[in-house]
Length: 123
Image 1: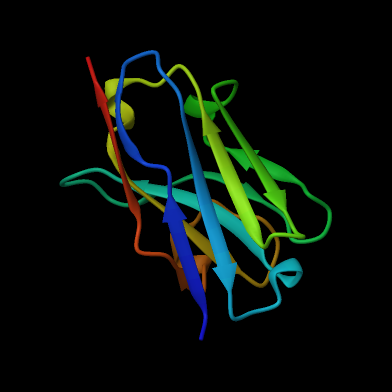
Image 2: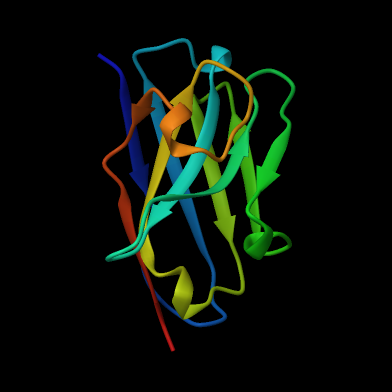
């Protein structure tokens, strides 16, 4: 059974930091690119960051460049999203997802999804 389990969300003040984790199981982790997405109330899900399966290429939404860092630990089948200098507008449910292909920030291109973790940034 494919599983992606996010953790690390919570309540933080503006300017603070959080590190999200996503633990994967049930598929060959190294064959898949992983993406982080977020969905705020009343808004569409959007891509935040992604990392390639084998080459480690990363991509970031323009508004989080320099604030977020995506890394993956293939030995642990886990990816991490370090989020610094958080803003209230980053408040959303954050999801990780996997796709067997190149990196992408398009949600519809992903095959497997986690349940999400809530990130709330207070002003």
